[in-house]
Image 1 (cartoon, rainbow, N blue to C red):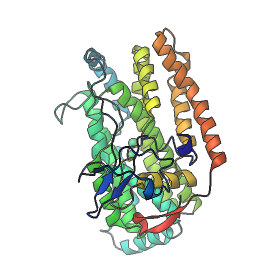
Image 2 (image 1 turned 135 degrees about the vertical axis):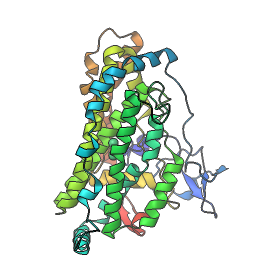
Image 3 (image 1 turned 120 degrees about the horizontal axis):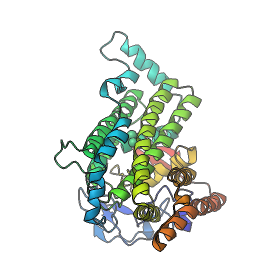
Length: 402
Ligand SMILES: [Fe+2]
Ligand SMILES: [Fe+2]
């Protein structure tokens, strides 16, 4: 772990299992489940111990041992009893469709006279943005585009899943409407990037197809306690990263792109508010199991939703993307610690009382984790070396420093 922290991105690349694979001649990778790399970046292929041939349509690297249904079935009643509460406290954070922005509001209208001029202007502005920025924007867009995976993930959760596809429970209504709101994020970024002329759309589209096919490994165990802690963390993480791509675009003078990233960030913030409210409620009615769940997720580390990304070429694509995001400040190890600190405060974890001995240990773990992560990060920064350049297929194999 320490050696990975040398790159300052450990909390970000938090799928901690070995994860190198090497392509075979058919374009399919070879899995190497037993590799324990000193680092995932710039590792020489000679260190890889190839074991099992990777199967088509399987994730580009192995996932954790899968634990299912870890919440005792009687706790499902808690979520049933929260139906009305969710209707008045959670569904209110959704926006009616008629009041929502749509991707078209921020893009040239191809049915209008003079749309060519608007596209030309968009492309002129995009020329001012560096390749490293586009790597981050593409990675963010691909993450958004794997939305089918996230809706699936929410529908794995016991007690809150959409049982029919059109269930009228508050939980199911939330999940569908949340998905529908989120769907605009990938659409908007995808269309912007297509029009920008700066990226290799075919490679990006392949990455999206690979990623949705691979799924994700959040280790939430069909357990809504774990699931909603995970989504709370993730919504804040996306709020931060879209906010940072907005800030970078503004700094480079592209106010329209800043507006695009900013409007997405504001949705993420609203979603964060809803998910953190659910967990706040769980802390209120079941503090012991909620603090245990929080500690459990943090021990496992929050894996990023797109951690299984692959473009058919780069076996360490997610690590490379993460490194660029870390270096230019779109999403960093410091952000990971900041989010944790925010959640500990938001849920007043330090002030919980009446916990069991196990609950108190979990509370102690969570409350002391932020300074520990920060210390590790500082040490990692101190050891940071000049990182190599790597080509990204998303930008026609142009090289970007990690
Ligand atoms: Fe999103
Ligand atoms: Fe989101």
